Every structure is written in structure tokens, then in C-alpha cells.
Length: 574
Image 1 (tube, one colour):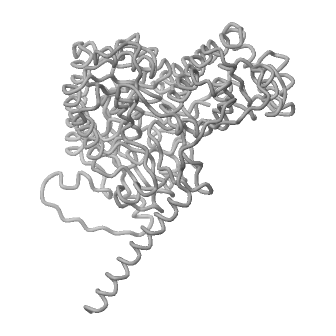
Image 2 (cartoon, one colour; image 1 turned 90 degrees about the vertical axis):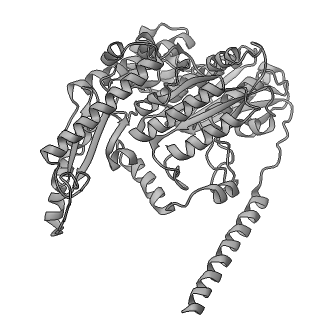
Image 3 (cartoon, rainbow, N blue to C red; image 1 turned 120 degrees about the vertical axis):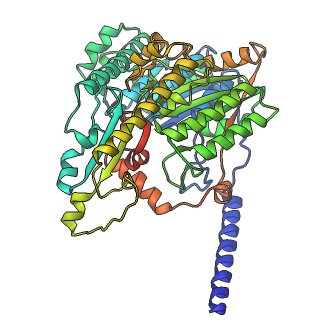
């Protein structure tokens, strides 16, 4: 037996050494060298899918991942520096298959508009673009579309998925209670369609996003918003129709775009410069301001998920990072960048506590991204200035309880359970029995207490009374534009406005340079292997793949249940 255990131990040690040596070899083989920027460069903003707030693990292996996927801050920093870089002659935008939210699109669209102030030309080359790609491209001086392509601009829609009938067939019940008439995150499990409250809020969301699309595109294309609304009703468009309607300027290919840039800039030869190469080549400089990113669902504990897992905010790990920022004497101020639908109620409180301590130690400004709702809104309530985009989804000040019940499923499968208890509510979190009346009352009392604490925290941070916040709470989702009108945020804007605010609060020169220091930092493959907690890679990959196949499937936090501060919907406006 002893020899067997010794053999197992030796095998484990050898396997670990082989993994480490393999990782080191891969890192050396595919490691990044400092890029060299050639003159007469065309900076290419080629983006697809989502644009993260915090950098994903950099595998540095070409056949597994494009190296150095840019974050929102990387795009902001690159365009700002490229505007004054003599080596960069023009900007080419090539968006494709975007799943990024509408608030981030507002940020990048404005970054492109700022770049244009340099006088350098900006072009867009589109491939079967939808509304998101076209919204971004509208910031360009000229838009190109392939002659046989299509412009898939045809209006906006929200689709919500409901699982009640499926769960009934399976014999799975879901116990739901909530405080706030709009706090309806349990609806996918308990209804077959939208409640009147959901329909009211989602119509407000569509009105804001569609209105912004029409006004923004209209201003860029020298048309009024009503003209764009009328054009949208005629979509989708063939390339010829899009050009005839004045939605694109030219029908052509990439070589046509580069030939026009040559004529425009007087350059004989141009070098294609991907943005993900450029932001690695340009050194950061200026006053060090922490960009503290809270991205994903809020969970308790230390683990933020393994390779391929959904990005999340683990209260233990995030609190540790907050303390790291607080103790860094070189950091002169902090921008808390929030992109979260909320999650675990207790974890949200723990994170807010740490952020309040950070706020006492360093100047702080909150910058909301696509989502800062429910627990994501709570963690923003440090009492410091809050900046959101008009298209940020925020608010949702409410509390939810969920618990699955598999009793009927067990009966169908012939599964039997014997339970012995001591204590009246010992089976409160059992998955095989429904809630008793006493248990339901206890849960509701807990929800009421949590809701009152939530509203009180918001009232204190927003310098309002409980009775002023309560009507704006009730679990209702607000868009940033409406949240500003209701006093739930202080200012509309993005990174530029947040940086201007933090520089003022930190008593830094208004015109000084700013180096945004990312927390968490970009990780290499080796960093990930040695610093990440153990997790099931297969489980993570299956979970993320399932969500790509079944749109609207709730997040892990919602499925686990309990007392939650989480947004009612998983919104994807197409």
C-alpha cells in the first residue's frame, strides 16, 4: 500500500513538472515581442463578439486565440494616442458579429468621434452588418460595403425565453418570492410570457435604444432622426439599396478603401496596423489612476471561475483586489468600472463594504458600463460620483428569492428520499419538499429586511430619503438617461468624463496625462496556471456552450437560487 501511494505521489509530481515545462516552452515559442510600429500606418479597429472590460487570459498561441484581445480601455487608450501619433495616418473600422452591449458601443463610437478631431481620415468597411456594426461605423467619414453584400438594419427587438411549460413537463417547480413589483427575475420559471410590468420596462428600454440609434446615426449621416426611423422600416437593404438611401458611401472592397486612403493622405505605401498590436507597442504614461473592474455576476467566495467560465465577481477575490488598490501608494485615484447584473445579496454587501473603505483612502469615481443593476448598482453606492452612459442598464433596486423543487421529478424517476430533521425549518433549503407556510413567511421577512437595507444604502449614497428612493426602486430597471433624470446617477458619459472627474477629485492637472492601471491586470497563460483556483474546465466549457445554444438561459447565480440582488432579465437587444 505504501509503495502504491508513493507511486501515485511521484506520478502527480512528474505530471505537474511536465505541465510547467510545457507551459514555459509554449510561452517561449509563442511569446509576444515588443511590436515595432512602421510609418504610414492605417490603424485597424477590427472587433467582433463582445468587448470585455477586463482582459481575458492571453494564451499567446495563435491557433487557439488571437493574441491580446483588446478591452474597452485598450480601445479608448489606443485611439487617444493614435490621434497624435505621426506614424498613424488613418483609422479603418471593421466591426463584425458584435454582441457587445449598447453602452459600450456608445463609448467606442465617441472614441472614434474624438479621433476624428485630429483631422485624420476615418473609414469603415462592413461585412453583412447589423444595427450594432452600422451604429459603430456611422462615426466614420466614409462607409464602404461590398457590392453584393447586405445591410441588415431592420429595427430592434427583445426576445425573452420562458421555461415554465418545460419545467412542468419535467416535474420541476421553482419557489419564487420578491420585494418590488418589477423584481420579476423568476418569471422565466413561473410564467409563459411577459408580465405587464416586464412589458412596460422592456418597452422603455427599446424606446431609449432605438431613439439613440436613430439620433446618433442621423447626426452622423446628416439626416434627422425621423428620416432614419423611416429608413429602418424599409430594411434590410441590398448594397445598392443602402447606397441609394445614403446609408453607405461606396460599394467596394478592402483594396478600394486603402487606395482611397492613399489618395486622401498622399501616401504611396500604407501599412496595416491591427489595434491589438498597437496598444501593446505604445507605452502608458501619466498619472496612475486605477481602473478597478467589476464584471459579471456577483458570487460569494474566492473563485472567479476557471478556464472558459463566465466572468464573475467573487466577493473574496474582488475584496482582496480592492485592498491591493487601497494599499498601492502609487495610485492617485480610482475609477470603479461596473458591468454587472448583480447576484448574491450577501456578497454584494461585502463588496460594498470594501469599496467604502477604499473610498475613504483614495478619490473614487464610479463608471457604469453596459450593466450596473441590482447588486451591480449596490456596489456602486459608495457615495462617490456615478457616471453612466444613456444606454446603461441600471437600477433594479429590489430583492429576489428562488429555490428549485424537484419533488415531482423525483417521483417520476422513482427516486425516494427519507429525511430526518430537528428544528421547525430544518428543510428550508431542501430541494425535495415545497416550502411550508412557516418557511415562506420566514423567507419573506428576510427579503423585506434585505430590501429595506438596500433602499437605505442607496438613499444614503444618493443623499436622499428612504421615501424618495422607494418609488424609484421596486426592482425596476432604468436606462442611464432615465436614471440621470431620477437622480440615481450623477452624470451621463463614459471614460473621458470619469477621468476628468477623478483628476479633479485627486487635485491633478486638468490637462495632464492619465495612465489607466487595470485591476485585474492582463494575465498570461503561465499567470493563469499558477494563480487561478482549481476548477472544472469541462464544467465551465459546457456551461458557457449551453448558454450560446439556448439564448436567455439564466446565469449560474440565478440557477443556484437563494436571496439575490440580481437583474430581472438577461437583455440582448438585436
